[in-house]
Amino acid sequence: MKEKINKLLERRAALMAEVEKPETDEKRFAELRAEIAKIDFAIEDAEKQLAKEEREEEERAARKPNSDPAPETRGKGITLFNGATENAADLTKPELLRHAKTALGKQIRMQLQDVKIDLTANEKRAIGVAITTTATEFTAATASKDGVNNGGVFIPQNVLYDLLEMDDPDSPFLRDVNPTHIKGALIFPYVVESNNGTGKGKKETVAANSRAIKWDKLSLAQGNYPLTIEVTMELLGLTDEEFVDYLLADLANEINLLLGDEVLYGTGKDECIEGATVGAIAGDPYESGNAPAAIKAGLLALSRRARKGAKIYVSRSLSLDLAFEKDENGRYIYPIYNNDGITSIATIPMEVDEGLHDGDFLIGNARNYKLNFTKPTEIYAELHGKTRVIEYTAHLMVAGKAAPKKFYYGSQKAATPDNGND
Image (tube, rainbow, N blue to C red; front, side, top):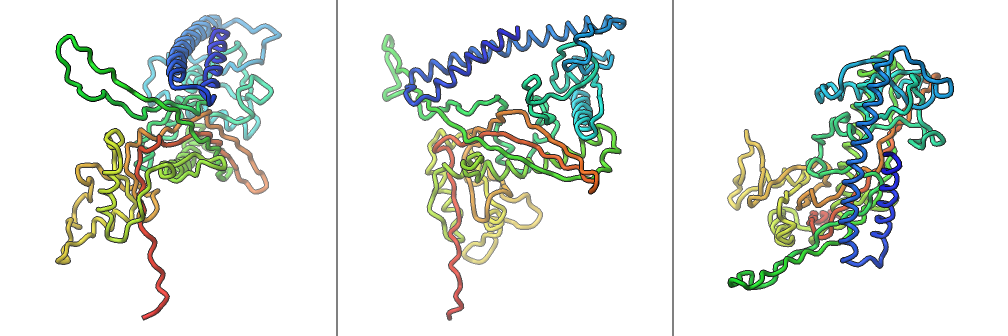
């Protein structure tokens, strides 16, 4: 089964390489897309079958408590089993997350203190570690061993967002983006336009118009982000779950802040993803007090397809300007006491995004921004005994870019400097 999966992955890589070729026309691109989708389905099905076979093998091994591994396999591979018999299939999601946390804590502690660890069957299943032998000693993967990683402890993508509790990021735009976790994928298709032609109504026996859908390729900008955080050695006195809770709280905060900024303003250069404001339709900077007119112009500048499901994301300063706006008689247009603020403009939902610069706003459907985690997030920990500090670095590799012409970006004109003249 593993050989079948490897062949499917090789075939997929070859097709993806063809997708990237400049000479690939629209027709061939559609064919490649369909074939890649079929391969992805076959890979998913094969992986499920492989996981089933490995579980059955594990259960068979667990039913032989007196068996001893052969001398040539003892201590090799990654068997992280300590005899627990609880069925992972019966566990709730909170229980699975708890097992994932303790497994991660054990791995980081092993990396810091160079100690041997055992993971329970439920911990293995929670983090997606496959059993390869019946050995009981865990050995961290390295660049020269198993080709898994280069010495860090990785957070599997199937539990990344749950572990970091990132389902509700601080940034509304980042929260509305629908991230994917497709290893190495940097090119995704998107719909450019569609139409049924003119004269949609037809008499009986007269053929209907063919619906024309034009697809194009969106090449994401790869971001490569190391995040280093220092904590005290006293953390080692915590339990594995408490230890990981502390580390992940810091990590989640840093990733939230990083991605919240980058999905908006990332340059797309120098190992950074491209933010939605970079390739957006940009209006002329508006004068102070003219934000409503600028937002109206932005809504009109977007196509009907781009406006579907769109929101208006505004900076904190702009939200305050709108909330404290007065009419020609000097009266506040909106009640400023005991209210929930402005939640929509012209029936379009509005949210305040603290990541937007003062006076900025962004209009569009966040689903038209593609964000893909291209590899598992890894943690590298290092203990400094003299200073009693643990330094750990999380390596985040993610690609991101907005589909062209799907967003409108507005900004306020810079104030004219006052030179002190009367």
